[in-house]
Length: 308
Ligand code: GLN
Image 1 (cartoon, rainbow, N blue to C red):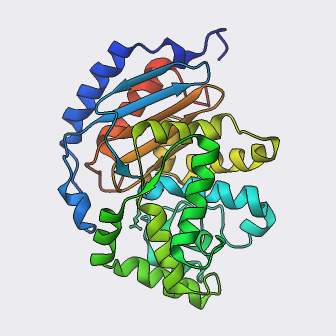
Image 2 (cartoon, rainbow, N blue to C red):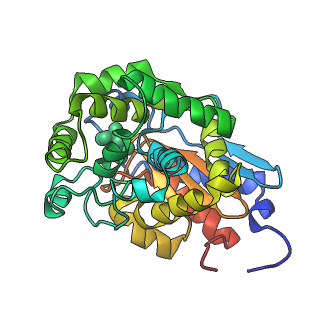
């Protein structure tokens, strides 16, 4: 579609506020996750959104200073970092690009694939990539990724120690089994170090503006060297970013999108901008009900699907 005007720029602040209120009502259909104790204690009513456009516009609703852990929304940026620094050959020797109809922490998928991590948006794939970060210990590996992103995306990600303690207080048996299987198949050498690195990366926290800035990295790569990696990351967000719901969302909305179990969601509108949302209650696939509703409303109303 080329109407001479970027569709995202036609959004109005008033529309966004109305839709955010509707998203808040819909979010009551979701549930807070309980397997990370601290995520069960957040305010389920919170709906926060920020949209940044390449033309320099910004739209927002909700508490812009709230910080939240990014959780799996970090996975595309871990992939981006490894692709930029190692190149696609090295990275895709360690993780696949196939979608999955299994949940994000599925051991069954990894077993069925003989220990090969199917894609980088699943826990298995992100753990395999966390194993490739440089650094002596989990803290320095997580810092490395965090500083790289803060410098290039002009954001201020910070490790949330309280949520990290909460994750460590309730060790996740599924992730432990995933990592043991990945060690068995040779994709992870140091299981404790790698699991701790992965957990720390998931506990990087952001404001909604930080998340939208991260999104712009994928819309406007800062360097020519980032162009191909950034295209690959967006393709994998489209096909795998919402786990089992990815195919339906591609049909309904048509935007590369990644969710996290905290309720954070990031969508990319190629050539135009990024939509960052946070609303904690989740649907059965582990995706934020309010955030997905809001992104769908914006995308359908403005005709943003990349397939238009
Ligand atoms: N740290 C979380 C986990 O591994 C991330 C998962 C998610 O956000 N879907 O369970």
